[in-house]
Amino acid sequence: AQSVAQPEDQVNVAEGNPLTVKCTYSVSGNPYLFWYVQYPNRGLQFLLKYITGDNLVKGSYGFEAEFNKSQTSFHLKKPSALVSDSALYFCAVRDAPNFNKFYFGSGTKLNVKP
Amino acid sequence: KAGVTQTPRYLIKTRGQQVTLSCSPISGHRSVSWYQQTPGQGLQFLFEYFSETQRNKGNFPGRFSGRQFSNSRSEMNVSTLELGDSALYLCASSPDSAPPQPQHFGDGTRLSIL
Image (tube, rainbow over all chains, first blue to last red):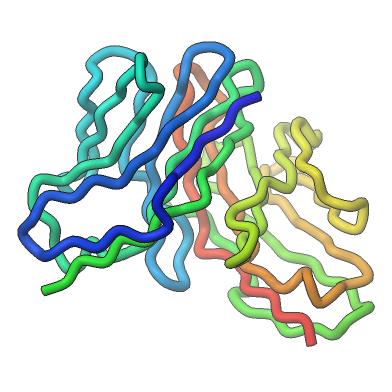
């Protein structure tokens, strides 16, 4: 069965420092991986995806993610954090045989302090 | 393009009542999925509809049901409401195409059960 794990409930980082939000996955076939962000009282917003190709994927708002097949990880990164990046981040994997069924991680709350 | 629209944004009900939530997907998106988000359980998949048919289903009791209309709009119904049904209910739409595409989320309906 497909699943994703986000090992950190919360990540704290100072503004201007690099940030990393971790995600590991378990899939039975090719991984289709996504990152979403959620601000208070809003739905999830798509940030980036990995389907195939380059292991470093660039997305919205300066975020990028590194796909590592050997470590089954898909960590979200940003070189310089902003206070406005503070939000809840979700990693998701799509069930390939069942295209529109997504499995979401438990979410990681990112706090960026001025 | 207009985004995913969910109505109403907020609902207050009492135990035993029933409720219907509505979702209008992005134009051209034929797949609509529903999720329940709670602080304790995170984001849980309820079901997915495609071309007026339920294509995927999560592990929720039969009190939770849905349907999709010919214009891809979808409704979700919860009968005999329980206190534990208090949650943010999110709808997401996506095109049904390869390669796998991200889901686009509405801002949700916050349901409170008294």
